[in-house]
Amino acid sequence: MNINGLSVSRETQERLEHFIDLFKKWNATTNLVAPSTLGDLWSRHVADSAQIFQLSPQPKRWVDLGSGGGFPGVITAIFLAELEDGWINLVESNNKKAAFLRIALKETGARGTVHPIRIENAVQMVGECDAISARALAELDMLLGYIEPWAKMNAQLKSFLNKGRDYESEVQKARGRWEFDLIRHQSSVEASSVVLEISHLRRKAD
Image (tube, rainbow, N blue to C red; front, side, top):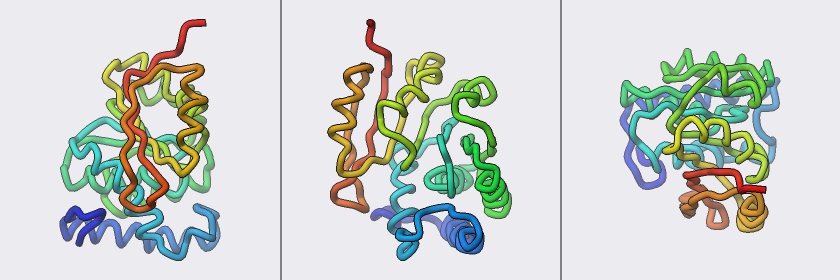
């Protein structure tokens, strides 16, 4: 099986398929993603989420902010299971979604922990990490505010953020308050989308 042109093992494929089956069952009663995006879960959500791990495929301590229906957090956790190393902390304050995430991790054997708390309270509980992901959560300026406490703990922190066609305006707005290094990765799924890789984040002096 190939995802974004890269092959994945049979075991990872089976884990992903089981996760999608679980997702469909839960989504019938819990709104995990917008109904309009359910038509092609593999490309709209799985492949889009897989890009995050594929851009940084080494074992790392990850934090996924606003994990929602598990994209990209659970997908990253499934890829980490193949490495048998690394870990991802899924931060999701909605208790129903957090319950789904726990079951998804358990049944797929993925490497992760669910924290049913607000992002602002997650830093003390989770501690230092190597990488952060977020998808369809907030504008970049707000996201960087969430990420800043972890960046202060680890100068080498990298963040991987899925963004749509309006990402340039978000970047320009964010640069009014933040300094950061930026690499734009063209999405393998959607021509108008990108994954923003952000490092060396620091707040501008007043």
